[in-house]
Structure formats: C-alpha cells, structure tokens
Length: 238
Ligand SMILES: C[S@@+](CC[C@H](N)C(=O)[O-])C[C@H]1O[C@@H](n2cnc3c(N)ncnc32)[C@H](O)[C@@H]1O
Image (cartoon, rainbow, N blue to C red; front, side, top):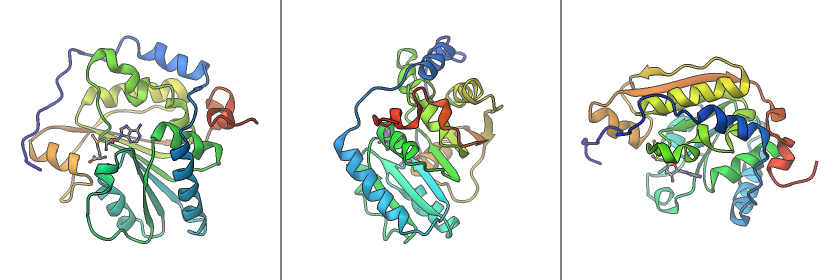
C-alpha cells in the first residue's frame, strides 16, 4: 500500500442537519430487513467457536478488512476471544499468516451479524469500528453507521466502543448520535498511532500525514434501546 492517500473531501462543514432526525427514527422504528441466510450460518459458526472459548471476554472487530487488527488485538489480549467481521471475501482471503487461536475471521454483513449478536445476548467487552467507510456525500448519511437504522443495535451491545476515522466529522457525528441514543457523553479526540498502526487504513492515512480521530466510550449492555427489543431486531418473536 502506498503512503499517498487523499484526505476526505465533503461539502459538509458541520454535522449533518438530518442526523438527529435519522437517529430518532432508528429509535422509533424496528429494522425490518430480513436476515441473510449466509449471515445466519456464519453467525452460527461464530457462536459455536465462541462457546468453545470457555467464557473468554469477547472483542468484536467490526469491518475488520483484511483482519490485521483482529490478529493484533488477539495478540494484545490473549485471554480474550476476538472476532473480526467483514463482508468482503476478497479482503478476508488475503494471506497475513496464521491466525492466533483466540481469533476468528467471519465473512458476514454487520447489519445482520450485530442483530444476531444482540439477540444471542452477546456482551462484547470491547467493540472496534476501525475506519468505517466514510460515505462523505451528504446524501449518504444513512449509510454512515450513525445515520443507519442499525445504530441502536450497535450501541445496545454495550462495552468499550472505539471508533477511529480520518474524517473528524464522522467521529463528531457518531459522538452526537451516541449521546442522543444513550445519554452518555462522547467526544471526538485526535489520535496519534503509536509505533505500530492497528490497521492497513490507519497505516496508509498516518503515513500520508493525515490527522486521525477517535471516540472511546464505555456503554452499558442495553437491549431495551432497540425498538421492539433485541429478538425483534433479529426477526424473531419474543
Ligand atoms: C475502509 S475499510 C477499513 C478496513 C479495516 N478496518 C482497516 O482499517 O484497515 C471498511 C471495511 O468495512 C467493511 N464493511 C463495510 N460495510 C460492511 C457491512 N455492512 N458488513 C460487513 N463489513 C462491512 C468493508 O468491506 C471494508 O473492509
């Protein structure tokens, strides 16, 4: 990967004017999209793997790309069970050496995987959203996680949630959405990676001299945030 990477270009100069309305809508209306069969199967395999980890604290690496961060987190937290999820088979298939025993890479759509995780009662100790796709066009607010109907599910899982991005506004918007949904204060802060970057995107942006931003927030497990409840979010009856 080269060290030249362009900063985010967006016509937005502040948080999207529709953000609060989108978040309110996600809190009021259950996400009805049916779950994909392949994600149900992938989740089933992840659940079986996690059950074999004997109650190890769970770390979710949501949108793990090629899975380098999943590997590094597994090495950093050897007592944890680290699950990296990405929908891109191409990214997940790139060879980065043997996976540590306490790491698992899963190909799945997060929108479905998160709903199944909440319905299963998963409580990640740590939950990472590392450099999610920014969707910088204002018209694409609903594709950013803070504008997406799945937002209450992400937050309801609870634990220490960490978002990183090279777009300050993305993190600022996410912070506003966290506070609107949970009442917990969250803040975008500058982030300077240490010697080793956690992900390839972090490496690329850092090497290009871009500023990085992050938000870290400790959230309670709160399935009641999800309209209709956790089981309804996964298309199951209570
Ligand atoms: C910009 S890349 C960042 C990858 C990695 N976290 C990194 O920092 O190197 C965003 C990743 O999120 C994944 N992604 C986006 N939407 C997703 C979804 N709905 N379900 C699963 N993965 C998704 C993409 O496939 C892509 O690998």
